Every structure is written in structure tokens, then in C-alpha cells.
Length: 149
Image 1 (cartoon, rainbow, N blue to C red):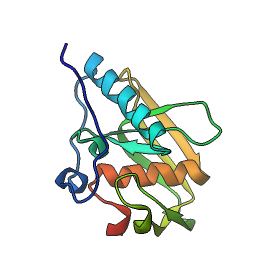
Image 2: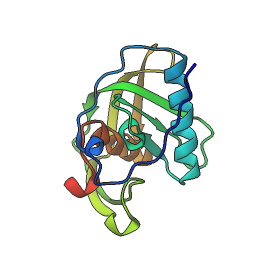
Image 3: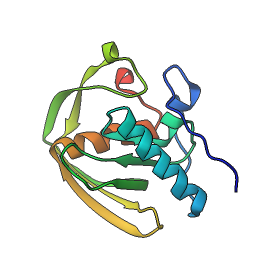
Image 4: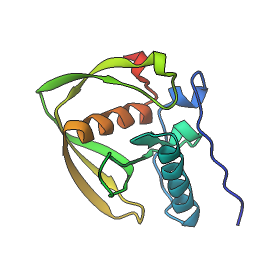
């Protein structure tokens, strides 16, 4: 098996501004990439990390909220419900400098359908910080950064 090496990519990298391709193959390589993404996210004190932030053209992200032991792996997400009630909060991004943080308006509630690390269909209803992180990562999957909003 080939060695997998991933590193955090900073703007301006072209892949950060590209709409990512769906994942079509669930294999050991995918699992290793997702595990490395999680490690990179934690090492950089992040709560979410999209595939293009480590140079991968795959529609997937990982997420782990503060004080929550659960690690989320979200592959090929589709928004089912985006609540009309909005909230504006300051957001940072691991691919930008701290000075590039921006106040971003997001829906308070969001529901997504996605596949997990094994390719199984799943659904997630989110509010608060989780909804904010999901929407931030969904933007990444569509090639948008917070400073593009």
C-alpha cells in the first residue's frame, strides 16, 4: 500500500476554491485519509476540516466539537433542511490566518443526509455550534472560504 501524507493547505491554493467531486470508492485508503484528516484537525485546534484543506478533491469532511468525544465523518453531504432563522458569528478557518476571521451569517438549524466512513447512509440534525461547523465545511466542499462571503 502506498504511503499517505496529508498536510494543511493555506489560501491561496486553487483546490480551496474548487467544488469537490463526490466520493465513489469506500476503501482502506479513504479510511486512512479520513483518520489523518481528523488528526490534522485536532493538532491544529480545529473543530472541522474539509478534504480540500489537505489537498484532496473529495466531497467529505471531519468534525469534532469541544467537549464531545464523538468524531463525525461526513461524506457526500446533501442539505435536506436549512432553517430560515439565522445567526451571525465570528468564524475562523484553518486555511486562513487568524486576522482573516469573519462574521458569517448561518442558519441556526440544518439537516443533512450523508454517507459515513463505511458508505452507509445517515442523517444528522444540527443546531448551534454543530450547525455552524457543518455549514462552514459545506462551503469548503463548494470551494468557498469565509472571506468569500
